[in-house]
Length: 108
Image (cartoon, rainbow, N blue to C red; front, top):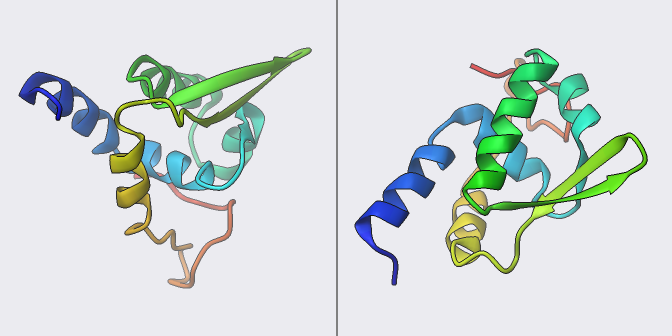
């Protein structure tokens, strides 16, 4: 069980469409931070800010490989089951309305 304050903070982080789409992309595999810059129609600093918020909420882990940073879902997070349940309800779409792969996701 989570306190109202804890759950509220995590839900605020999950409530952003870009962050939710980023988590969806990490649902099955880790992602390099650079791949998010290529996939989303937003700047690198904005991507970094989103990743920082997800890390601070305890939802992500990072692995450094030289100059690259790879992110994955934090399976040890007390919110991991909730995140996975939510991600199971998320389907990414590209602008043509078809299911999107891991790229060409437009943020709002």
